[in-house]
Amino acid sequence: MSDVLYLSIVSSIKEKILKGDLKPGEKLESEPQLMKIYDAGRMTIRKSLSLLSNEGYVYSVPGKGNYICKPDTDIFQFKFNKYDGLKTHIDKVKLLSVTIKDTPKGIEKKLNLEENDKIVEVVRLLSSKEQPIALEYVYFEYLPNQPVIEDMLKFANYLKPLEEKLAFVLDKTLEIGIELPNEELKNKLEFQDNEPLFKIMETIKNTSTKKIVQYTIFYIRPKYLSLKASLPKVDKSSNIF
Amino acid sequence: MSDVLYLSIVSSIKEKILKGDLKPGEKLESEPQLMKIYDAGRMTIRKSLSLLSNEGYVYSVPGKGNYICKPDTDIFQFKFNKYDGLKTHIDKVKLLSVTIKDTPKGIEKKLNLEENDKIVEVVRLLSSKEQPIALEYVYFEYLPNQPVIEDMLKFANYLKPLEEKLAFVLDKTLEIGIELPNEELKNKLEFQDNEPLFKIMETIKNTSTKKIVQYTIFYIRPKYLSLKASLPKVDKSSNIF
DNA sequence: CAGTGGTCTAGACCACGTG
DNA sequence: ACGTGGTCTAGACCACTGG
Image 1 (tube, rainbow over the protein chains, first blue to last red):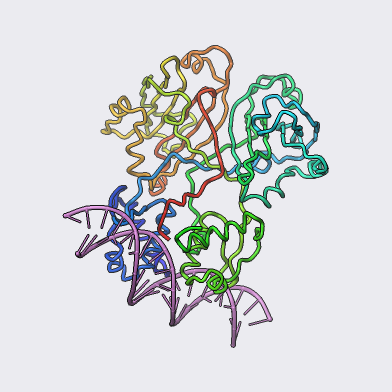
Image 2: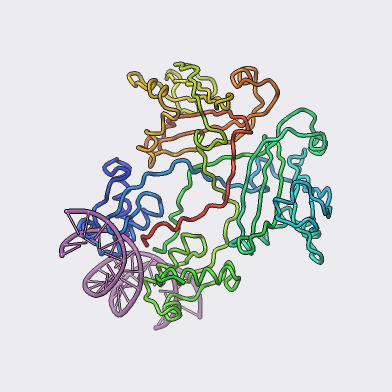
């Protein structure tokens, strides 16, 4: 029960679905019927249906009716940030190298570049107070006259401000894999056993220009990374309907 | 440009955001102003704002105004299904064992069970035409007089029908880790090197009863599992607003 | 054809935030 | 007091679906 009519209608219908009175695929009462049932105007009913639709409970077919969804339980959602989402606080970010290369092996396809283009490779080591945790390789197109180096030294996540500015145009993709470390990785991460590492590949693409802005490979020891996902929750925070 | 007024308003405002004329944090024109700008009624303007809100472009503060969002770029979404989401088709599902145990070590906390409760452990091997791909341990409470065994033998995913019926009440959680296989895992998956495995832990909880319905550990060779995630896309499929 | 959902308007009242 | 967004209504017209 809510003091707002359309929310109380939402609760009522949701309860019927949860109790099983309304089953996936079944048709709801028509909107004129719902108006009578809940003593509400049409737009109020439709606001309720809109909310239920956003939350994945209901869909509608023009000319036919409103129906209960058969929900997809296979979509998981997880919040992930290379720097904030770790189990340990990152105390040090050490810039190992910044290299301008002109023959990137294996990476050129990822960045959609021509053969003559140059790319910047940034290698950074992330450590807690005690020990190294992760190694990061960042690749992006080399554009002369762009002073990125200073920002890289200053900020753990130097792309963050850019991301917030361009966020609506950026499309990020993650791929998670496993890799057994080679000697270089072992040395840089300062361990000697054959502990496998998470290999996280992040691609950032500008959807306007269709170009890949950045490609990152992130190696991290599993004990420091928590990869938890859950079914997407719909935020009811919005009041606009 | 769309033949539907509120959609054309959405496009117009979205374009302004993408071009950078409207920046995150900035205030939109007030609703009465927007009514004049677009020559539309209030509810039409609000429908547009509603859509923009659902897609993460706009939020509103009662008594103040509508604002451009500072989007969160750290939430990734991926579609995952233990059985359909693999790189290889699963040809065989071999039931290795079904055991009723009364002292589950390490699992009892996960299932919120009392000490005297019994649980069922189901071990299954999933194989392609050529070779074993994944090993699965499923744990759930043992309830006498419930013939689950037959279903388990018949269906690769025996919980699937149940899931679809109860989907609105089920809360699924995934955790992804890495594990170096012990001898048992190596033998069952028929390989001898030290290839690390994805360890995927799935918890299924009934949100009504607050009980954990099922806990699954899924070991899979990395070459057969594709774990790709992207920023959540908002489906504009819904016509209810 | 009647019934359904989709779009849109004009207008009302409220609670909230700022002066 | 005024402007803002939040809720709600009554009524209109349209396109689509079904018998």
